[in-house]
Image 1 (cartoon, rainbow, N blue to C red):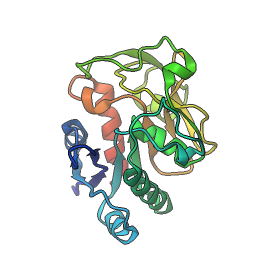
Image 2: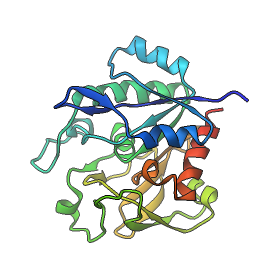
Image 3: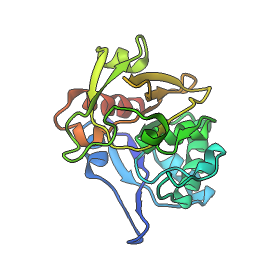
Length: 234
């Protein structure tokens, strides 16, 4: 059987002038039957068009905060480091992904990017803006669970996992504020933060706020999410 090729957006270390990836992004795809490749950081639309033709699906990874300009706000002191080149590349890539109805999975920054690109807004700092008591930014090891999310009944994620409450790991200080109109929620934290979304009009555009790339070796639900994504790329 043909294995789908999955393009994975690179993490960017601005200080070291390097691109890199957490191994779990790649390994999670591999154990699910896909072939992962790390994408270059490029804003060249012709090159991104070529990548669209080469890849069957795309994983949008974690990383820096999203530039508030993407969701039409001024950057506050609460916002962390941003990478404008990465924002621009992912805008071009995601637009072409949607145009071609390619499968896409967003993780952590990925859910925030999908939401901001599609017209939603982001908390620039979740704790400062909401005073939440939910433990959204845990310390290592990142594979252990940090809090519970409640799955939306009848959502694609709930139908896949066959559960209503899911323990998840968590490492983020931003999050979905106003949900974009063409996204639907699939999970909420107990403080009502949107933790998972999908785009009903597309074959497979899913995103989660937690980190299956750290937990897939021990958590069956994380493996199921990776597998559903890879299967959608066939």
